Amino acid sequence: MSNTTSNSLGSSSQGLSSDNVIIFDTTLRDGEQALNASLSVHEKLQIAQSLERLGVDIMEVGFPVSSPGDFESVQQIARTIKNARVCGLARAVEADIDACAQALKVADQFRIHTFISTSDVHVQQKLRKEFADVQAMAVHAVKYARKFTDDVEFSCEDAGRTPIDNLCRMVEAAIDAGASTVNIPDTVGYTMPFEFQGIITDLFNRVPNIDKAIISVHCHNDLGLAVANSMAAVQAGARQIECTINGIGERAGNCSLEEVAMIMKTREALLGVNTHINHQEIARTSKLVSTLCNMPVQLNKAIVGGNAFSHSSGIHQDGMLKASNTYEIMTPESVGIAKTKLNLTSRSGRHVIKHRMESLGYQESDYEIEKLYADFLALADKKGQVFDDDLEALLFNIQQQDSQDHYRLDTINVQCGDGEFATASIKLLAGTDSSKVQATTGNGPVDALYQAIKQAVDVEFEVSDYKISNKGSGEDGLGQADLVITWQNRNFHGYGLATDVIEASGQALVHALNSIHRAITIAELKAAK
Image 1 (tube, rainbow, N blue to C red):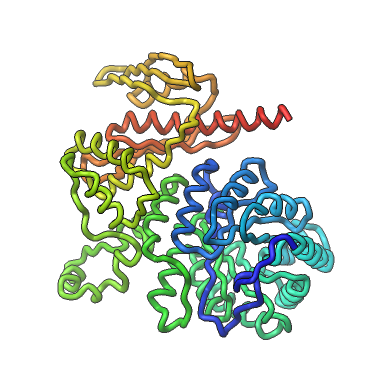
Image 2: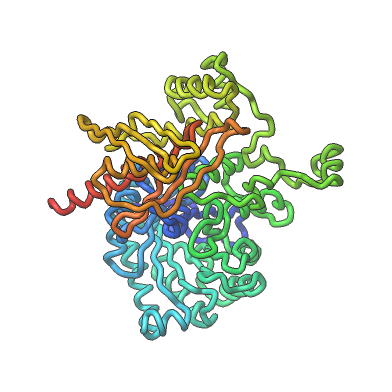
């Protein structure tokens, strides 16, 4: 076998005797496939590296057979990540498994995750097969995947609605075939916690070889029960939870990683289980995923919402002043949210910036101090004080910049008032030696700017979503523009950050146009072959 594994993730089940719950993150697979616009390879790699710092055990980073772009991103992540196991998804067919193996073979360790439906409604209406045929396909897929790695996971899609006799047969057969992890998904978010716990209990009681595999769960949130079902399964003996950052994913989303991680940390004495998660990285990872995926986190979201550690009631505030644990069962610092915001000015030196970045959890290797300091000084000259949020936003903006970008916005000049039209003129750089100056009018400053950019590029697109948010502190905070543009029935997300929201809007559109240009280039290269 080309990828022999020896640690606990790929060996026999840790079972009820283990107090460690494996965190299997699927933000870049189940989470990403539900976005309005696909992430670029660069963006996926940023999220993967953040997940690695967070301490996830396994990250499912894509569905390699689905597209050349997905294959490329899975391969790049597999080549880069060293401290977590990288996993790819495959249907129970050889071509999918081959694509996974080819994309993942550059990794030190990898997992192939293959699946097939097991519920009556799926088997009969979607697959149009007999259950025995489906079971045979599953067994063949697991055995085939084992040719490439010892670490094979098998999922019984729609297990929550699968007759328990059939589910037991499928789990036993998959383990016999060589699956070291068997996943029990509540694919449509249908089961209640006591029902789902009962399914896991029945499997442990009825499947004779259950001790040879880790039992995993993958719960969707259609009824708001994904986290509750996952924790009920852990109490019944499951020792892997499949989840996503901020709970993003199909329909109402997946089980939220930050919620189950903090449940097991906060209630460890009761539950008797723990994880390898570095909890201080939760807030930063949540913010990165929210920004790159263009999915704002609701204010009242548990753990990472803006109001998660806010107290408005007078009674609550009085209690907090006397003792924080009167109304806080965990601290903001425990998930990486700093209570104290350090104000920085243009008189602050590089050593102060380094110290503040260190206190925010960043290593010197995470950024180039000269570039960060130059951007910091430019921002400090514009707004006076620079806050922690601003500093992190500057770093994020630097990380988003790509020296290989085809389009670059050189100058912007926008004029507007109470008249009928706004006007905009731009100079847009393209490639290494081309530029175009364009001026036009619009219904407002952003519309005028976008019309000018549209006329300057040879790309037909439409803006389908656009919004502005404040990413700094106060009225002079940094403005973030997020948009989605549609080109040839595909959606592309763009992001921009600046003290001027018009400038940020221009950056966001150019960011999306660069993603389109990369897609065109990949298609041309593929056609040339």
